[in-house]
Length: 156
Ligand code: INI
View 1 (cartoon, rainbow, N blue to C red):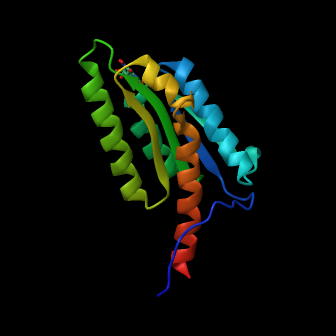
View 2 (view 1 turned 90 degrees about the vertical axis):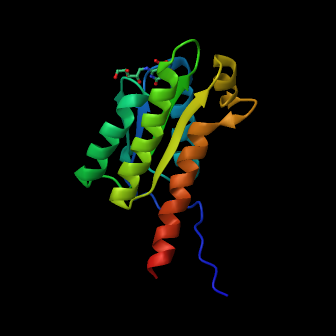
């Protein structure tokens, strides 16, 4: 049986964008740090890494669509933090962000990851932004690194 899978090695040529929703920036700044750290650790050249900032998670899919259409990037990593609090906004924003990211990704055929946290509390968000439960920004970057390599392996 031929097993086709990716690895976590970048060669330094990959052009990657992080798209970050600034809302809850205390959390999202940590997700960006995690994503950048993962990119560097896996051999990426930070001169080829762009950070695109949007107001909130709702706007991520719009910027993602543009980034993918621009032809400038090999892969895009999305990060944001939607925290339930007392707002009914939570359900709309988290659903639109998730759906929009998946739709844009599917259309482009390029590796895209969803590192948008959707949590009930700020504590849960902190736990996923570089403490108890790891850093979901780093995980999202690691995911596109693997998918980049997988897509290459699938073309052979
Ligand atoms: N945006 C977030 O990224 N996280 C949130 O928790 C959030 N809440 O709670 O309102 C949020 N709202 C802003 C939203 O993403 C848009 O920027 C805004 O609705 C303008 O379109």
